[in-house]
Each structure stands twice: as C-alpha cells, then as structure tokens.
Image (cartoon, rainbow, N blue to C red; front, side):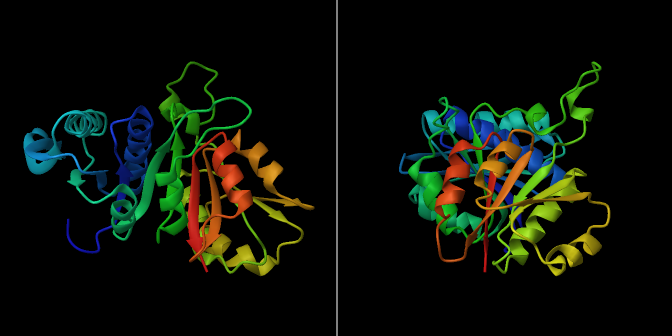
Length: 280
C-alpha cells in the first residue's frame, strides 16, 4: 500500500464483536471501492504467515501474524472475507504496538476506522470498551463503532416479498447536527455516506438550521434525498429513536476533544452502527 492510500481499516482482536465489525468494514470497503485493512495490535510473538489476496488462493501475500488465537483470527477473517467479497483488496497486518496508539496511527491512512463493541445487554445499552472510546476520542478520521451481532440485512429496508435482502434499499443515514458548529467534515461525511448507499439522509438538529448550512451539500449531492427534523431542546432522544430505523448514525466531536456526553450516550444506546466524525 503506497503512502497516502485511503483504506477502510478495522481492528481485529479475535473476539466475535471484532469479526462482526470486520464484516461491516468489508461491505463499506466494497461500497467505496477501497482496500480493506485488517489490523491486530498487541504483544504476542509473531510468526510468518499468509492470507488470501484479491485473486483468491493463487494470490498469497506474506505477512507477519502472531501465533495462536490472533493468527487464526486474522487468517480466518481474511479468508472468509475474501470468499465473501472476491473483488476486495484485503490487507492483513499485525503490530506489537499497543492497541490505542496503533489504531490511531492506522487512522491517518484510513478513510474510516471501524471497531467492534459488545452486544446489547438490555435497556442499559451496550458497553463500549476503553480502546474503542479512546480511539473514537482522538482519531483524526471518522471512527465507526459496530455492535456485536450486526448483520448485512440490518442496514437495509426489511424484505417482505421474499426477494434477497441484499437487493433491498438501504435504510437512512441519520446525522445529528449542532447548528452552532462549523462542521463541514461532519456534514460532508454524512452526505457522502448516504450517496454511496443511495440512501436518504435524515438530519436531526435543535432549533432552526440556517438554510446556508445544507444548501451547498444539497447541490453537491443532488441525487440524495434529504429530510430535516427540527427538535426543540435536546435532540438525543430523537436521534436514539431514529437509530432504530437507520443504517448508520453520524455524530460529531470537536477536534482535540472527545465525544460529548450526548454523543457518548448515543454510542452506548443506538440501535445501529455509530460514526464519530471529528470536525472544527
């Protein structure tokens, strides 16, 4: 991979949540026609190994992978994803650097960084580990948090006529927007994500949003259907409700700061993957 090449990068630690996140990341990489990078960070001893590349079993790339469970997890994920997405360029890497700094460094070359979280545990939502929160709070690129058990059909409109779920339209992308923020990176990510999926974009914001905020983005993405939802007061409950019928929830954080209290609550309780996007 040459310097500056954008990827969809996902952290792999051998857990079920990380493998579900890798599956989501593979679909995102395919949608965006980007390479998929599988990254494990840790201190297990490494041995030489290989994974399948874009052309299947005839294209083997030499990589360093750790012995034991992590090697098996990396190999298994790369092999399974290469069979599920044969046109996808898959890169598997391991580093002895601790997880948070390794993932933050990988984010520099990524279009999006993807991490897994444990599954829902009732009304309290699902716990998000210190690694996921630490990376989401500091990464220079968007970080998508995917809960365990997320399936391909979860991001699409439910099928009722027996047709394949993969042919159903995508559910809306929901954007939580603070009118007081200068958030071009946040808005641009949400519009671009909706356009890549040919999905509608629902923008939830408190009070009145100046028409100039979204106008240039509507012109740039004329094929994207945009619906605005104004909320008087805290938009958190409306965003949480909207996440139950969304394919992705997009929230922002100020550059140099971690996600605010409202964003952290949405990360823990949302019913769909959550993208945390840094912006000025």
